[in-house]
Image 1 (cartoon, rainbow, N blue to C red):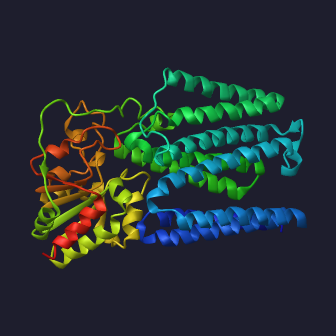
Image 2 (cartoon, one colour):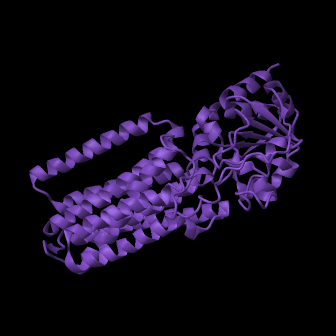
Image 3 (spheres, rainbow, N blue to C red):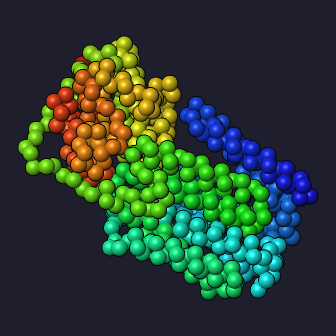
Length: 466
């Protein structure tokens, strides 16, 4: 295959990736977007194979690698529960970072195979590209591993605040820049591996201070990092498809992170530097004032919703953990048969990754036209009879709107407290992922429904028949 033909096919695959991103921007077109992405990746892989034209033995190794990786991916995708998707995404990001490190190392030790020079005589621009790619890749690898451990519950989700962490991070960042300069001028293998080690440490230190409700932004930002790592290595390999794909992933992830930061009233620069979440996610318990809550039952909830004209459902991570989305869809269907208008309100950071709630509701076949984002539905709560909160916590906390001393003050929330009645499904009075008390629990129009989310919704569905 000629390089001109390969360049054209890479361009086609890039267009397919752009169409994939466009499709994935809305639930109704997400399936088509996935198909475009799959077609683009298949075309890019096949073009690379034919362009490389390896000898028979090398071709067998490539096919074997594809079979092993594809087989593992297929098995994991089939077995993974929807509740585990955030940590799976974080783990996959780590693999992209690790691949960038390994490709850079291969290019360092066998530059002739990559057409970038020879040992001791690698082209200067290739060294710089290699250095940037390996630094971002190593940072993405360890940062994603920490995110995976936090999301999977194998590590505390709370911020881990190291003393003088900002000074340490700045020092490591400066060290990486200096080492890149040394590596570019000397082509020292020691300098290369020191870049890797410093970046690995920086990845850990950037992510461990982040916790609480900020984790969805972390997943999005790591997605961006993995894209830039791929783009950097694409320059080293002189592979157009990898450059275009990496740039698309990197820029789209950065844009999504920026949108989510605005949705949480966070500083975008702080996200990039890993400096947010530490000071703001300090646990804040009750203020010592004696408070009471109104506790209800499934029968109470069924009666209130059955006699309502409008119900807005607000799902959160608790719904995901309990796998209550199917029972929730059944509840909505029962309400609609009674003439009740039902809508779903999604906060941009509900769950543990962007779009987490949308995916779960789609899995339960909830109609897309019933699902609304915060900015599209928030004004409707004041005219709503019942807000049914199932597993959401921090994203409904009125303290973010009313209490200037709250760690989450300024974060846009779903104004469920403005509904005539707020039904709140929760296991206990415990704080949410951000570790702060939710003042919504004590509002006079709030009724707490203490139970497993799935069991409570199933009991409500049974109560409709009474």
